[in-house]
Image (cartoon, rainbow over all chains, first blue to last red; front, side):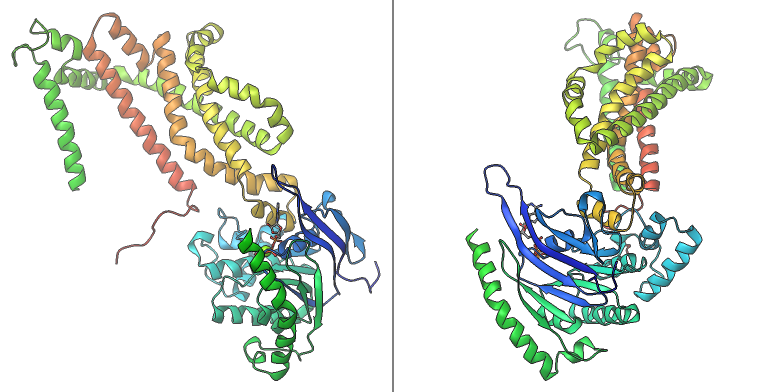
Length: 273
Length: 265
Ligand SMILES: Nc1ncnc2c1ncn2[C@@H]1O[C@H](COP(=O)(O)OP(=O)(O)OP(=O)(O)O)[C@@H](O)[C@H]1O
Ligand SMILES: [Mg+2]
């Protein structure tokens, strides 16, 4: 394992989903190559349904690609042998265990790893505090708001301190204010120990404000990255303030130029289907 | 409270109707040609009531009720454990479920009450033949619910647990089992009812004790009042069992969202 190996390297990935009866197989992703360097924050933007979640699932080792390879810090990841042990994954859909209270959800990963109960509790309480849920540890997920559940999921993932963070539109369900708070919180947490992050969103503002690099995907089917932009905005950033800077606006215009056509294409296709 | 009052009124009207139509000589005969015929076929509420009172007063009923409840409990527990284990196994292993599918379907469509005489031959006339009948009834209810529940666990939930580092055993314990349990509880009312049916039907077909046996005896002497008293006691205890299950369910299923949980201020 060399120090130079990227945290996550997806190479020439193609994902073809088997057809349902009578239909054609659907090629969601074709020949996609994407790398995330160690310590890098990369965002992936693309129109809805283009295959962003599919790519994350491949990187997580939850989905075996039809062809192509995945390397984690230089080591080959084979989905059949198990998931990517160095990654934490925040899912797009709700993934909390409804039968566990807040704190028991947060400490689930520690429990699976055999950490003692008292230590897990202590660290769990600490993380609940960090995501602003201190005092909500004994509530069940259905007793929390959507935003609280997202923060709980964030704590559940981060408590394990994964080297790679895969995030699938984690904040898209939140209102603008909460969302900016969470984005700043995420940046602060990230700045502490510089994990490698692959962040999926369809919000270009969010992508630019958070990342070192923004990758634009083409519309599906046969999605692949079509453009790659470096974001050279200074850090530390404040996501609400940085949106006003001329550099941000220029970058936004540039990336949106590349994206617009794909978004329209995706829209037309979904309308036709 | 108004609801309770109306419910009691309905009960009172029913009993009143029963009393008036069966009391010999109270109304002119309109169907039977003799005065006491209606009472012979349909019993009389005040006599049924006194039989029940005497049963409980003398304590005679308790040994029968005890046996019936024991059979119910055993049938339920054993059937539920088998159903849970089998449901988990077949739900998690698609090859096993493909092999077993026709057998499960076949056994399920068989009217299983006809097994009662066979169980009587195999297990004798004691409690175990009744337990066996209860088990066959309970098993399928629990089995199908668990099987369904395991297959419908959200894939995201499983993926999340795997990403958090859950091994296969941990996945079973912390995802599949709790998910299946909520389905078991959904079928619990049904299952307890069926275990009760198994016990009573088993007793009715041949036994030396139990409420089903009391009913069988009374039927032999055309004592319709005792038959009805037995049915009344069984119904009351079925309701009690149902309430107990509801209590346990509320205890264990606190995590489940209810329709509305606001409190009036
Ligand atoms: N298991 C599957 N079987 C068949 N088709 C699938 C499957 N999973 C995804 N797809 C298809 O692949 C395409 C990409 O799906 P994916 O979930 O990756 O989209 P996405 O980019 O994450 O969209 P969104 O922004 O709406 O979350 C979609 O057209 C979807 O219908
Ligand atoms: Mg998605």
